[in-house]
Length: 192
Image (tube, rainbow, N blue to C red; front, top):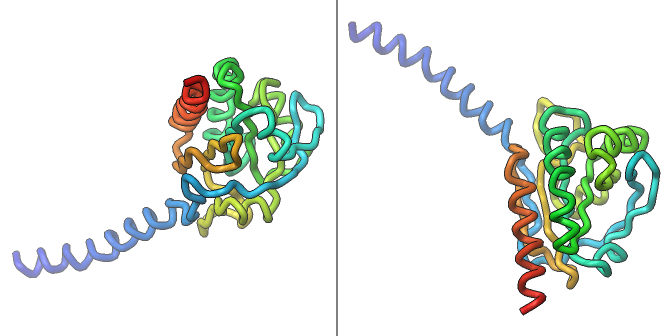
């Protein structure tokens, strides 16, 4: 009986190590910028309702707070569901005076299509260049995925250029809720 228990334990150790390694590899190793930090300024090309445009963070901040959300890859299940959730809440973001833009490493042709199909023509998506991914510290580092992808990380940037909220979680579900709450709080504090 004891020999059988030892044998089972020996078999369990590689399984436990493999499970731990899988958990570690499934977690993004990004070290996002912190709340209160200055948001790195950037400009990139994007698409809104299938049309190409230039996005400049500095110019967008002149109009109000910016919700900048990074996502790994257009037309994947979680990224499409997240885009749908942002699209459904766009009226509330606009009412709070916020601009929303999604960024991924996808090329401009893909972003044009994604802005129409997944974003439902309600908000833009842009190209997250390697420099932008690096500046915002959102590189998704997983051995099972190609290099250059961004983690699912949302930032709310106040008009003063500082980061008011950072939320990083590969589960898309709370990104819209938390960023919307943050921009609504900014609006409420502005009117006090």
